[in-house]
Image (cartoon, rainbow, N blue to C red; front, side, top):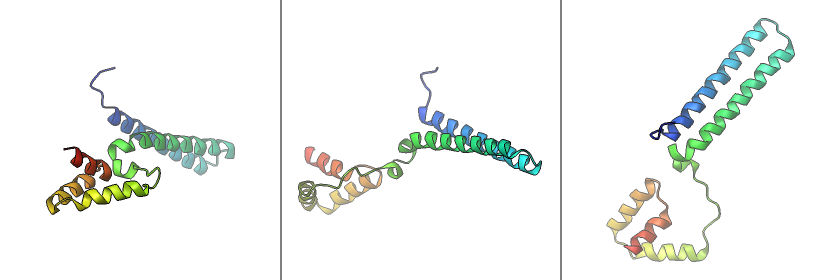
Amino acid sequence: MSHDVDPVARMLAIGERFLQQAQEFDERASAAVDANANAVDITKLLDLGAVYRLRVLSAYGACAPYCRPKLAAVEVAPASQSTIDRFERRISTMDEQQVIEHLKQIAAGASALAVVESADDA
């Protein structure tokens, strides 16, 4: 295996391959219905298509945080009152230009609290 492999690109490629396979099973199931195939065989083809769609979901889910981090973000718990107070105090001491710069960083995916705390450390 090469050291310059892009793991995210690989996950996307795997997801695309699984999606292609799911579509192939869907087409085979449709052809089986048209040919009046046995219901058990049709069900097996449909089940295999569903399995591959779950694999697509897994592959895409694994790379989502790297491709679309804002969509993959999860809030684990609401902020405590002390965190909110600290955040508000820090924001209130900033001038307009600092606020605009912080908003740009947050829009780019940075954590609001981390941005404000990094400004205090500077």
